[in-house]
Each structure stands twice: as C-alpha cells, then as structure tokens.
Image (cartoon, rainbow, N blue to C red; front, side, top):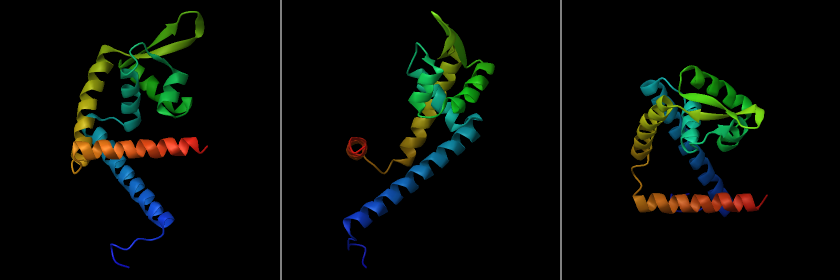
Length: 153
C-alpha cells in the first residue's frame, strides 16, 4: 500500500488516535522532564499551582480535584507539600468549620508565574511546526471532537 492510499475510515481514525496518543504522551514526558530538571518539580504540582492561579479566591479540595479531574486523595498530598513550602495556604470557609479553601501565597503566585512562562515556552517550541492559524484550527477541531464524544454519552 502506498503512502497516499487510504485504509477504511475506521482504520484511518484508529491510526489518527494512535498518533494523537503518541504525540500527547511525548509532550507530557518532555514537560515532566523539564519541570523536574529546571524546577525540581512535577507536572501534578504545576497543575495544582496553575489551577489555583485561575481561582484567586481559592478552591475547596473537592473543587480543586474537580478542576484537575483527579481524586481528592491525589491532590491532598500535593497540597500538603505546597503548604509546607509556603506556596499555598488553607483558609477556613466561613460558616463551615470542616471546610477550607486552598489559595496561592505570594510565593506560590511567583513560582507559578515562572513555571507557567517556561511551560508556555516549552509547548511553543514543541508545537512550533504549526502556525498560529493551524494551531487554532486544530484546537477547534479537537474541541468539536470532544463535544461530539460528550454528546454521545
């Protein structure tokens, strides 16, 4: 079969899925390595900082887990270490003695900004073969695919 011949639509879509998965895993591996080598950090820690940076009033642990789409247990240990390092604080929720909000400290905001700038640069370099328009078009197509798969549930 030549490179220009197409397989059945389902086989071509399967090949596309495998390539998307390979690309995604490769990017994630590079990000993990960069965060480890440049900041002595991890991708989950960065994800927590980034999520909290978008919610300046803070998030309850359950909300943070929901934003990150992981279990509370996965987030608890990360938040504990970030509290110990002074990057986040727990703030009591008025009227609910059992609940607390997790917020970035000034130190956490600064560290998040530094890591986020590096993260953007790494992604820009890895996806540099795409023009801004191509990146926007592909992102839109992927959003449509996600929406279609969510509608099919």
